[in-house]
Image 1 (spheres, one colour):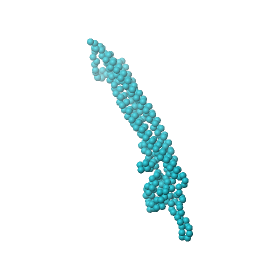
Image 2: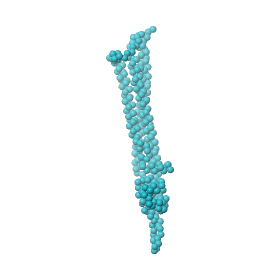
Image 3: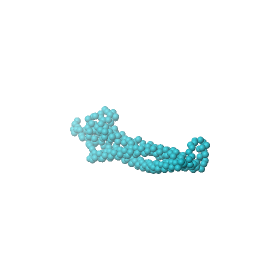
Image 4: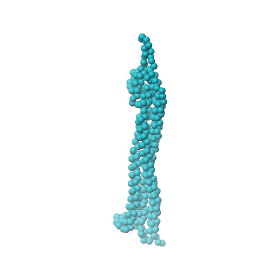
Length: 297
């Protein structure tokens, strides 16, 4: 019986080439999809940055100081505490602590102590003479709230609460985008590993079987690893053609490995660009911390 190894090596190489081609096509489409996904995530991140700056601009014009000033100036409970002498003999720190315990709606702006001192001074009792050595205590109208002031204060605080809610929603969007960037970056590792296997598999299943051909019928393939055999195969026309095909295909694999490396670098830059302050509501405004504390109460 005649044995023709040429058929075996030819069929083996064809099967290997077909299998590698199918897997490579899938990997390439997957890699292109990952690149599109990065572009989408990058655009999403840029959009969130624009929205964040818009919120910061809105926060910068909200009247936190005005809100605290009106509350300290007209708060009824604070006025009663001042009349009862609860702030007498206290240090500045103790005055602020007392103030914040009485009016927990304050944003604790830097001028609260100043506003409190003004309220204490304006709350000093006034006396009007009505006769010799006789006077009566007059009502202090300086601290009477004007009509509609509490509606305006409530409206301003509602605006601040609403922007805080929007900022919290934005933080969630940042977190979702960050998680998606991390997850997608990790998806590149199996693609890279598969391409490395394909580059090795191409040599083993295609190039190496083809280098035995052509073989004489009934001859047994001989395996040798000496330098002379390797050089003789390379300098032959068959070896030269196989080497050219190997270099071309391997160059394609290397090109896609380079694309993966570039994508990984882009993902790392995007992940590192997301500052921790973007994920902390207190970093959007120091006064939001008072709202957080108020919600916990």
